[in-house]
Picture (tube, one colour):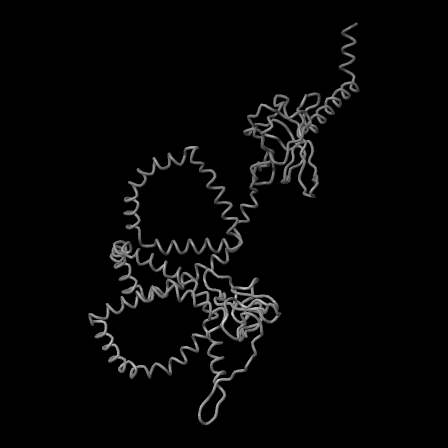
Length: 477
């Protein structure tokens, strides 16, 4: 009975078709979802920010050292707070990678020149890892990928023309020089031998040679905007060297050949010129105050030069006349009695110095000498054909004991208001040791009081003929 039942199931075409159809549907479902991972297989899901998805699509592989470790399940565009756009990848990775170190990096690379891409994952060495569903920051998307179209875009029309010209120029330059090239290659054999330790040093990690190429790339990026200017520079250099070729021999050649001897002389002589340079620097430093006054002194100097141009032609006759004067001065200086007279004159000036210092303020401060000559000339200004006479007025003396009208045994001191002696034999004249005042001629008259000597108070330094604001006090009498 069992055998009959089994034979009935295998012989039933409907059941066989249903089983085949179910197996086919399962196979199609598995193949359709193979790019997103097999169902019921645990995965480690991460998100990653990239500056550019670079034509990634769902189902592209995630590889480590060329080995598939996951797939890209979703690609979307996002925008940060600053308004910058980037790509957000959702990846399903093998469970063995959980947790992925936080210093891991991602980069999009092409599978082939046909345009298929994959995500290359480089695990880091950090002990910390990304949790399930975490987002790898944009800073981990490095190094920057280089697309094949970017490589091809370097060879634009200008670059291709330049390459053609370079090949043509090198071809023309090397044509017919095979023997020379062979000799050059032979001479390079020691270089190849000696370059091995140099290359070994460059290959060491401590030299950080990788930074050289990144720096060269940055330099090329900086130079790219001025490429036309650089090209024009070489064109101008060609013009310059073409002009120099005309004077290369003998002028430039002689300059180059004589330069070592010139440098040797300079090396020996320049140290000897250091004192002169120091003195010159000190001279110009001392000239700075005078140079600062040149803007204001220049007009005066111009007038002096203009007047001097008329005066200087007259100086030769004067110089000839002065010759006899200087001869006389020379004879005078050679006279043995002259030093004695000079010493006596020096002693006289030394003795007179305190007196002159005492008398000088009488004129420089009080103007007394000028006033004396003025008053003397006024005293004798009246006269007739026979001569001049003094001008005076008779003033009656006051009456009383010891009055000024006759001999007295004591200074007049009353009893009347007018019978009082007023006398200042040594008035202050602003001399050293005295009060700074011009007392003579400025004393006040004390009515009813005998005054002998300096009167109290400062009478000021203003006398007749001086400016009003120079001092204070009364006018000269």
